[in-house]
Structure formats: C-alpha cells, structure tokens
View 1: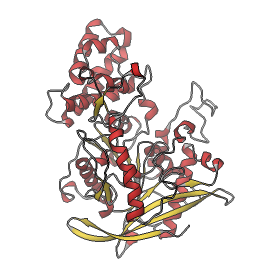
View 2 (view 1 turned 90 degrees about the horizontal axis):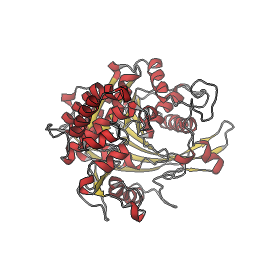
View 3 (view 1 turned 45 degrees about the vertical axis):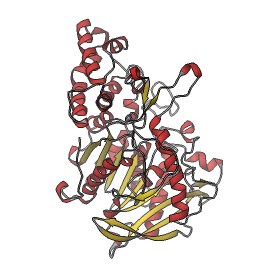
View 4 (view 1 turned 60 degrees about the vertical axis):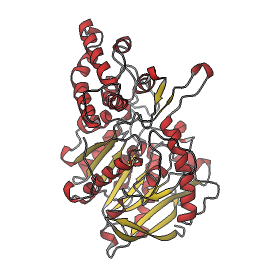
Length: 488
C-alpha cells in the first residue's frame, strides 16, 4: 500500500470538539498472480481514541454503477458537507463547504471508497478496467481493498458495517458475500442500504409488471401531496405515503391483477381514487389501463403548470422540455446539486486534505453502466443453464442478501428511503423487506422527506444520522441525537 496522505482536524460532536485524522490511501489492486491492476482510493476518517480497535468502522460507497463516493462523502455523513440549495433555489457558483452536523464520525470511523475509473481511482489499463465492469468483479475488487485496509490499520477485529447507496446497495450484498467467502473470511456486523436497488428487476416499470405499479404509488402520492395537487386529505408526507401504501397493497393491486377481467365500474372507481391520490386526472388513468410508469408520472403530475419534477428528488421542478425543439430529458434536481459537489470535492481534497487531484476528480465513469455485466458469475441465469441474456435471464440479487443473513445469524439490516425519490422508492423498499424471507427481527426500515440522495437534505440527514447511530450502537432512540425522528 502506498504512503497515505494524513491530516488532523477537529469535529464538534454533541457540543464537544474532538480531534480526528483524515487519511487518504491509494490501495493497490492485484490479480490472482499478484500483478497490479490499479489503485482504488480510500478516504478514512479516524477519531482519536484510546482504544481505536473497539470503534466500529463503516465502509461507504455510492452506486451508478460508475459513480464516485463524493455524494456520500460530502453529502452529510462525512465530517464536512456541501452547502446545497433547497428545492426552491438556484445552484450557481460559488459553492462552499461547512461542518456536517449529521456526520457518523461520532459513532464510527468512516472509510469512503471510489471504484476504479471514478474519483482518483485508476486501473493500469483497459483490460483491468473492464474486469471490474461486473457485479462480481466489482465486489471482488472492493473486498480486496476492504481486507487490505483493515489489515494495514489493525482493524480486522473491529465491528464492521457496509453502507451502500443506490447501485451501491447491490454492491453491499455481493461485497458481504465476497468478504465472507474470500481467502481470509471476514464477517460484517451490519449492512446499511440507502435508496436500495437490490430488487430492481422486480420493481422496474416494464410493461406487464404489476409489482412495479404497486410499489410506485406511494412515491406518486407523496409527490402530489408536496406540490398540492393530490393526497390533499393528509397533514404530513408520512401520512400520505402510508395511506397510499395501504391502498396499493389492497384495492389497487387487486384491480391490476384482474386486468381486462375488471368491470367498467371497478376501473372507474380505481381511476377516481388514483386521481385523488396522485393529482393525475382519472381519464388519463383509465386510458393508461390504471398503469403509469414513474417516468410518465414525472411529466404528468404538474403538466397543467407546464413543469416536470426531478428524478433524483421530485420536490425540484423546472419547465418541461420541449420536444419540438429536440430538447433532451432534464432532471432539475441533478442540475441544481451536481455542480456544487463537483466544485466542492476538488476544493476539499486540495485545500483541506492536501491531496493532489492531477487529471481531475471523476464524479462518474460514464462507460461503466453501458458495459456492466449484471449476472452473478458462477450462477446459471434463471436456472436454465445459460449465462447469456435470454428470455429466462433473472438477476436474483436478493438471494445473495437473504443467504448472507442465514449464514451470519447476528448481522442486521438497515433500509432507508427518500419519499421523493423517483428511482428507488418507498414501495420498492417495502417490497424488499416483506417478500423475500429476510429476518424481520433484524431489519430497521425508515423513510425520510428527501430524495434519492436523502442525506444531502439537512433535516433528513440529521434524522438519518440519528437512526444510524441507534442502528450501530444499539442504543434506544430516546437516548441519542436531538432533533431525530423516525419514519416508516
């Protein structure tokens, strides 16, 4: 492992200043023959403690696939955060950093990881880069880095947690398996899934997928409530979400499953109820056979205002694109937040951590998603003997997670979701924890009034941090951070 770049800083936790070390390492990746494949950067924050080995360590990574960890790193869970504009504000330079009041550093040491091809992490050549463009190859690379980091820091015996966001939740499941079944097995105390996508194939909005329609409805209800066009009978986002979840699993699921067997009266009743919940007219619901994708809903919910809502966070709005001018699809949430992260991460690494960013910090590896191999290597696709895409191809990623919880009987699971997240919804998270035999007594599920990057919202980040404090320490909710609230 190359020499790390270290610096000392102070964080205020509970009104008390405590010192910590920021340590940035370029961790070497090698293949089975010992040949170097690249370096993956790890950004560690270690609180000064008389017994560091007793402190939990949380390894954090974002998704994509092909995204750096900058969103988690500077979104609120690290010691410093980007000062972001709210949904009603613009986001032009300049940007600035501030101390994060929602950092997890008070309860655990933190290690943020950038995949090869993102951040400052680089492969030695194209062949080495392509090897990590798969679920299994990616997990093996991360497992090697986690094991190396723990060994070098003398932390193999510390309590260990994995925190993944979006595609990073799939990575967390496969990484836990790789760590347990590697050359030197390591067990994980807890897995934290934020904006989870482990059951993505089951909840994607393809034609005929009833599960996708059922799980999308709570997101639509909360978005309509926020913008004042639907779910008007509720005082809070939580109430609107819960009511829509109940209806989705009840009458809505029933009429959808009946399909063309549903009577005209049943369809009319459902369309009227859906219009009340979502703010989209009943005639539209009837014309669409009571089925709207999340992408369609983004364009319809504020259509009368000529606006579209954000994908990353449906609280953000912009004037809808004009297809007559060949305008591309836009996401107002991404457009208003991403530039702030890009500017801040460069400034932070150079000026505060003393890490050179020669060649630039890469927020995304734009090739990764298009070249990604989604099948679990070594497992026949769908049990039909073919590992190539076919009509029977099934990405049964949840099985990796559920089998891990059978192997490690004390491991616990945390699932957190933003109510205004179009991509990975509250309904999809509820589907994950109820449909796959995961151990209910070891699961904590929460949702927050935020979007896909829920921790970037200050209030949501504080609540999330409090919930994660409880999850990691096992303390009661009433004994932790002020201002915390639980949802879900």
